Length: 223
Picture 1 (cartoon, one colour):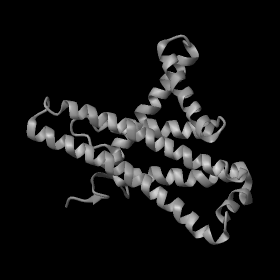
Picture 2 (cartoon, helix red, strand yellow):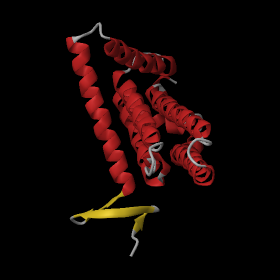
Picture 3 (cartoon, one colour):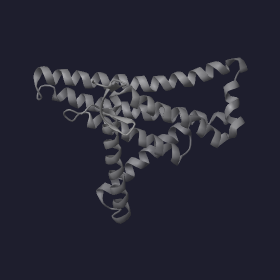
């Protein structure tokens, strides 16, 4: 029987845990990114003038500047989260261009998990910065009667994060797959390049929106 979870085929079982294609792909991307980060970290420490060190510095600096523009000050933890989300999503989208590989971000399970990470990080950042009451009281502004709407807004934007990323990546991957099947590999190559560009754009948008939500929680006590 073809067992599927969230539409993903189960490849094998690891004890009581079924392992899907999306889990394998996302794990492979995570391992590749971790190895790349370790290599670049070693390069920065041992050869700071090397071009790879310069690239690594520029990437880190770009996310620090992004967070500073949105939050109003530099915040290492937020920049680390935004950069990690961008690199993971971009890495999954790049992997999805390989023959026979389904992008992990084309699964609603993956995008939902990423959205939940952001959803949980928002109150954590707000409470760490403003204290429990300093963060919670913003739900009652400007009128306590609006508190349910504030909660609903946070839940709906989490759902929107997951569905937006899933829909854009899944649709682009399906279009490329259909063109490859109908016209061969060479004809849809420009479409594949466009799909890859859209994948990077979606990763950037996800990182920006996550930073905006967390930044709003950090500045909630300043209102």
